[in-house]
Image (cartoon, rainbow, N blue to C red):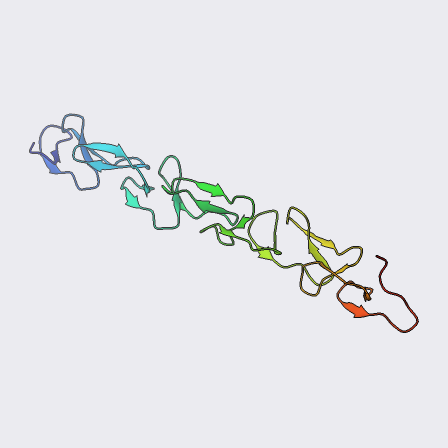
Length: 178
């Protein structure tokens, strides 16, 4: 048989239609396995950011990543981003978040980052970020918060009951203790 053709019984040569390849001394025409693709007369492993669910290597569209066997192309979970070669998902570093699994970005202070590292939000009034910025804590002592950051309430003012404001002392009352 001529190149690209095969004969199952040694009688009639048939064309081996791509993406299948001629194997067994031109006795069969076989598709490549998932994770592989045809290259001349052999199946080769898909490489880089290519994948093959059906025996044909194809490009995995950004920002998706390929699995280690190059069979699937999927997106990263929130709180992760693709590696530079797009072969795995990497968790966001401390102080960063990723809402959609596309790119980790910095979370500006005084915002907090949730445990999944998927959102960056302000604390509600009366609260401020914990030291590690993983949650919100009530403002304490002589501090208050209008917009998610505990601020010092200077004398002669006082913090209101829900810690959302710093107000002048009511008549006949003294300021915050120093």
